[in-house]
Image 1 (cartoon, helix red, strand yellow):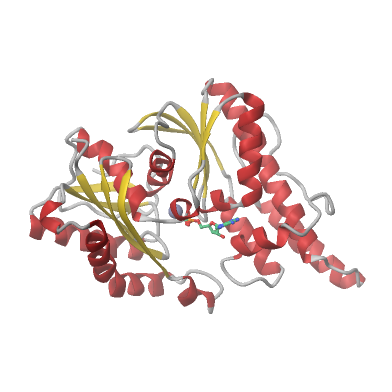
Image 2 (image 1 turned 120 degrees about the vertical axis):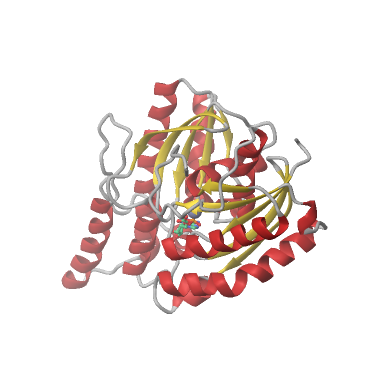
Length: 340
Ligand code: KG4
Ligand code: ZN
């Protein structure tokens, strides 16, 4: 079972990716074709453009993934694919392609939850890391605290009531005139700024585990507009650093509370925003303070990628779980939900 070769396919948003893993954690190849340049001219992801780009790229990307892994389709044990959540058209392109491969090569098909896959990137990144643990998933579309009780057991214990953390980063960046996707640009800019320069609000600091980032986003827009009206100089690096400090501060506060409530001794970060350098060091500081083990994937495993999809699928494969070729996309499926 541990030698099972899983072919992963990921097309839920704006990365076309295919990967081959052995077992749940050994990556033989992980090819990622980013559409960032295609969407940058529009200032954000255009769903139909994303679907069309996946259609054009997925076959070649998968061919390269198999070649880099040194295996053929016949060697593959199962085909895994992100089936939700995500953009419906984008999901359907990967799903249709994966089904075609599974049907033609007579391989089992396994539909994967994209957010659970982000969490499973940690099994690849940190050998020996295992449930139970608390995961903080911070991406462009999601911000959730997840109680991971087993390889297939996920319970959301906190989530955003409005914007996702990545969305807030991208909107604040846009207000500063930075190119899309803004998160990585904000990270770079914040390094030369003062995190205490502007006292931006921290949403929902009560004793719950939910997040709210829309007030912070509005505060950044108001600060920029008022500065312009008053003729006050805007220091973009200070805005970026103060914004990041507010986001990271509230994420860490809730993460710490989640660890205390669950009694978990391990913590994992996941999703695109997990690439943020300030958040990463804040998580390491928190883990040292609380004496918990921590896992944070490297940048390539934080962004959307197919290795994490194959990693998540492995645990279904190992239990003999398969999906029928009638598997459909579920753009809004909850963490812990079943596909069929
Ligand atoms: O997980 P992901 O690649 O796609 C989704 O499933 O949403 O996350 C993308 C998000 C974007 O909002 C992007 O701006 C943000 O992650 N991001 C960052 C950084 N790198 C990517 N946000 C803050 N700092 C970064 N270094
Ligand atoms: Zn994602």
